[in-house]
Amino acid sequence: MTKNVLISGAGIAGPALALALGRHGFGVTVVEVAPHLRTSGFAVDFRGPTHLGVLERLGVLDELRELQTHGSAMSVVDEAGREIFRLPPEFTGGELEVLRSDLSATLMRHSAPTTEYLFGDAITGLTETPDGVHVEFRHAAARTFDIVVGADGMHSAVRRLRFGPEQDFVKHLDYYIAGWAVPTTSTDAQHYGVPGKLASVGAGNAMIVFAAPELPVDLHDLAQQKDLISSVYHGLGWRVPEMLAALRDAPEIYFDSISRVSAPAWTTNRVALLGDAAWGVTLGGMGVGTGLVGAYVLAGELAGGRPLSAYEAHMRPYAGRWQKHAHPGRFLAPRTRHGLWLRNRLFSTALVRKSLLLSTDSFAKDPALPTYA
Image 1 (spheres, rainbow, N blue to C red):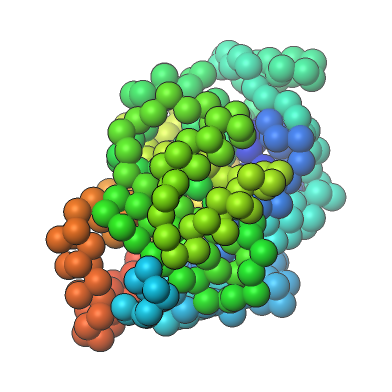
Image 2: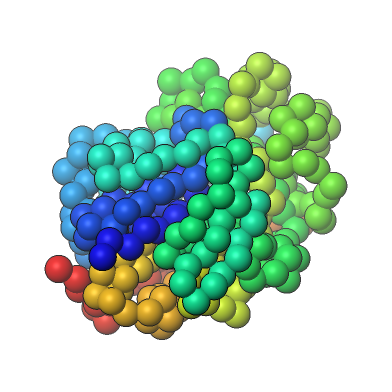
């Protein structure tokens, strides 16, 4: 009998899981709180045989190669624009780099023939029974599913409703990040920093990272986010004024805290967490690739008739290799002048850059992951 699966979240991991489950003959519904797929976001990269192998098995690798950005170098500059050090494209873009919006759209398009998508809606209630999960929605009529998967990011509604409040699982790492579109023809990303603040422009996008304790900012209030960013970055030099000018008219921005998710359990009998909802780190370099691997493993275990706990047993060691040590805020925006100087000095050394690239690549390789038909 065909099993019906509800996935919360139409970002990356959700549509990837929908695609994999649809190929196994499952009935899949994806619910997404946003009214449509997001068109903004940063580039994401994949590296190593594990990431690329999953993309190939999902049937999207060749199409993504046509959409790839080919990576871009990352230059750290001073206020006058003089280069301090440069990281090459293979460090910042891996073996395959694509825009997050292109990846999301590709996965959705491939999954659409076997998936029901509900945009502009959200899960408001979950009741797990021996026979299924009764789900209440903000707008749609209540329904019962065999399995529910929370692929709805760090602020997961499924995790909150089934496993407990967000503060039990999400640790704020004392940094915030934001991004929006800017009119620029530069492909390489230039980064300018002062203690506790980063500003970056490249490939048509602006990005900022700044140190701050947890703030009472509404993640759904665009005007409030713009006011906060403008106040934090007011008076800075380099290209910050043009970034703030573009921010004023930006119809959409990405804004979030830099946080880490630590969830003691990812699964119950009929509910599972996937991607950032389970093991996320904001801006964690391996997060998107690990989310796709998780979708592939979860679909394979369900297709084989195994319990959700089998998926968790496979993925915990893999995701944990990079997740527990990732802290992008400290690297991007060191809090002190000495910390900024030390980072710049270290990354100006070719040996340090090479060793970091090798260690990053090693996280994308794991021959212990299972292979599914």
